[in-house]
Image (cartoon, rainbow over all chains, first blue to last red; front, side):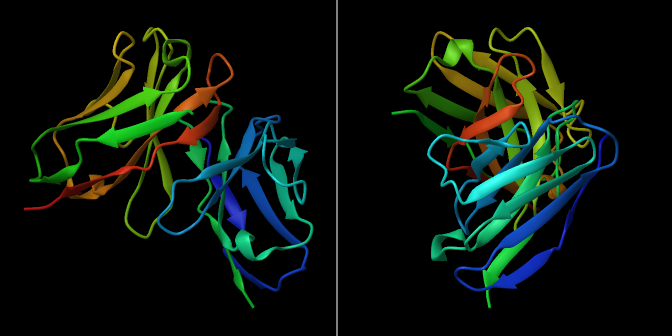
Length: 107
Length: 121
């Protein structure tokens, strides 16, 4: 199975900050990677698919990059509604696997 | 609009069975792959299973393989998860979600609101 890791596990940031989250796969997955946002008590929401494609309706301050084993999610200017936990997920092969999550909270 | 509504969760004893349902509306269910994903209390996301739009292919996570079965009724627009030999570690919120892009339905969106399964004696 492909193992996914994320760093950092948590980050404290202020509104307006640029935030970058890293995701690493245990083997190459090309661009078969998605990013999700989850707020407490809510279902996850797809933000980015195919490593860098923005899901419809997602603000342009979110962006994704990477290929192979190393990927990043960037929030260019953090907004109050962005405080949440972010997960990466590989879709290269079954079983699909998620990273452990990165919690973005208020500094 | 597109909607996924899970049901069937509850409290069950270890070793017993439970069947979850997910009612879909607002999109072409019969042409969509479907996933189950779970989340233990306070923990991260764990992918459980996927089923192809016509039910021809099914894949499972390692921790549920041989115990859980995903199925669907395209005439009723309902997705199922039959869970047998339940363990305490199966306690979680179970989400159903649509798979986007044909085979292997890699992108998971949107998700239902989830149903809580608690395995406890």
